[in-house]
Amino acid sequence: MAIYKDSNKTKDGRSWYFKVYKKDYLGNNKVYKSKRYLTKKEATDEQAIFLLKRDNPYSKPFDVVTKGYFEELKKSSKPSTYYTYEKDYKKHIGPFFNKMNIISINVNSIREWAENMEKLNLSVAYLNKIRNIIKGIFNYAIRNFGLTVNPVEIYGTFKNKNDEIIKDEDKIRYITYDEFKSFIKVIDNDLWNTFFTFAYYTGCRKGEIQAIKWSDIDFDKNEITINKTLYETRGGTPNINSTKNNLNRKIVMSKTLKETLIKYKNKVKQFCDYSDSWFVFGNSTYLKKTTIERTKHKYFELSGVHEITMHEFRHSHVSLLINEYVNTSKSKNMKIDTAKFFLMMSSRMGHTIEVMQKTYMHLFPTIQDEIVDLLDNL
Image (cartoon, rainbow, N blue to C red; front, side):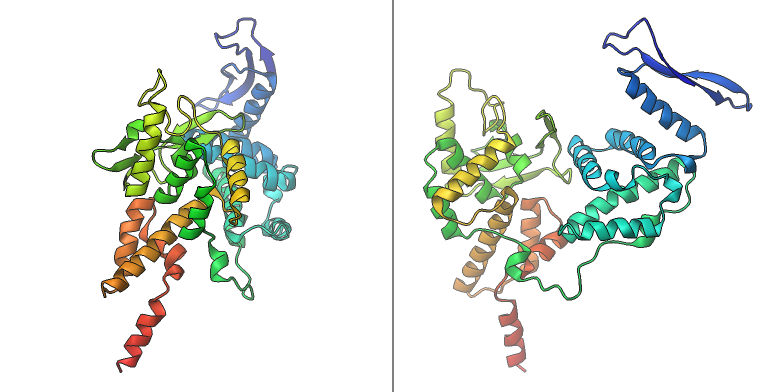
């Protein structure tokens, strides 16, 4: 077993390869020569994975098993998912487990890691996302190398402490309509005024807003097609993929949003190289997330409104519609039908009804009033 360098490189510069013995279907040892790789380190890493698949994995380092897991993940997932998992692994998992052999990691090891993680004051939802990465690594070892036990499954998930009290206003954060008006009032730049108006009146995710193009907006039908999202890799390279849930959806524009977009498009069309294939926000290129965050922070400071994240513009949109739905129902003496409301909103937001109800039900202020009315009728 050794690493070699071929004197004849491939067109893209790959020259390193490894040779190992591999049994054929009769059980005879045969020399296996790998494909060529760009660097010696890459060839060495791939050799380790090959040997891991060939031999008993129990004596192998955890990080070698992980390398194979991420190779598989890269082929089967979106670049954004792969990048997020890799980042979380390097920050929260690798430093604890990398020097261990996979067979030595048991429930007590997972418990010790989990206790260390709980000291970081991260949300339970985020902790469980990180936990799922480790669970996935062990499931990969079970599928590929004959491992029989997943200690992460046995240990279980992170849970909220029973004595932890979470106020409704802390479950999700948003800005009210009056706060949004104060915020948008200080933005005198056409691009950014349109950008934040779009975010507030559509509730789209940040990557969906970054990816939107003029060809996705049909002013005649008064609707916007959401069928892609943009994700920036570590090096800043944009990747455009399908939406988070692989669901395409149509968003009907409000009068305010439509007028704002038409006004902005008329200004953009003055550029001689304008094209409908341009990004709505950024023209021939896209708006980078660092630029968005920096600009958002500047305008929130100018307005004096408490700052929210781009994702919390999404919460603000739902809050706005809940308030309008409740007020309209009251003025028309109509029953508040939350099931109907969340059915409509699930299509607009690209979420399941269950997720919508779990996240936003507490924003309805009249549920208790209706219950009391029922009791008073007894």
